[in-house]
Length: 468
Image 1 (cartoon, rainbow, N blue to C red):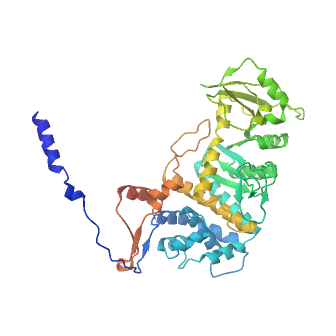
Image 2: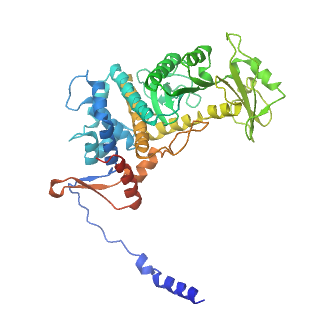
Image 3: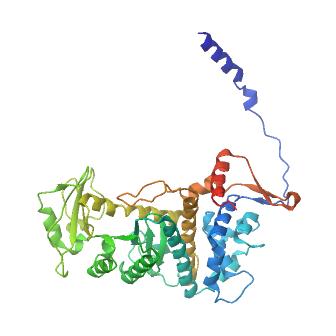
């Protein structure tokens, strides 16, 4: 009882009064606009260290060496575009908001930032050679991380994504788009790495082409480069039914790549009938069953392993009813067929193929937080460079986290990323978009940031990884 009385007495002593909490702020403040060395993006100092560690400026400079010399070098304009996307800005007009920000000037390496019209003219003057060299620079950054990681397996996912626009941009076309019918768009094909959740490469295409247009050559080049760069690593590839074909499967087999590709039911009515008539299914997980049919398309010269999986679902997936004419139907089940050359159990094959879903999350982050969905210019090379800048911004955010932390996961059957990555939006809220002030005591530059324990701990962790 005495302890309880003492505790209540101490609580009463520390109780805050109303007068200490409430107050009036009706008095008008005097507002002054003064020239001060302030910044709203103090966290850019972390990315500035990353740029220096990677030698990013030196990597970008050769991409534009064939262009005429200008006051603002083209590689600096592209680097500014990457910083622009890292800050969460989407429109080029948003550059006017931080034109006098010293943290941005330091990150880009310019004493004065260009205005929006200068950036637009610089993008309009770039050509296809710039795009090809920029693609190579982005690939090299991703491959260097894989070399440092030395994974036993490197998994590449191939898939396309629509980049729609309302303008008449060069190279766009109206293709299949059930959400926005008749909209002009690009239909690029991406290659992403599952272990690092980075965008390895992209094949730019107009919006009216088929999913498989140019895919075989692009896949061949991507896998050949990875094979040369990672000679001791087992390569894996995953793709959806749009890339199903003996030419693509033969390519994977010639490159000695472990693969899994979805089988499109609408192209093979005989497979649908075979699945619906199947009565014996093997257990392949808690809510999944499978069987391996002795079946192949008539056009195939040899037999390949096909695994059919059905999963129990509480509610049938919504979608166009016309597709039910081609897909197998059974109450409470969802069906999937996968062709693969893996020799593992059907359950692990199903888990491996289901890991493709992480690529959709990567596309969502690229579009919503890195500006990939924007088509800012009318010329096609400028739009391609903007897309590459968005990919580079995403890859740099991933690289920053991988450089500061050891892998946090082991290799899984789904080939999930080896790090618990934070989204770029979270990084902006935690430390990137923080106010700061530049001071020069005894001519030594100092960045002063408001004391916040969480921000301080986060930035110190990153800065410690790039200690000079």
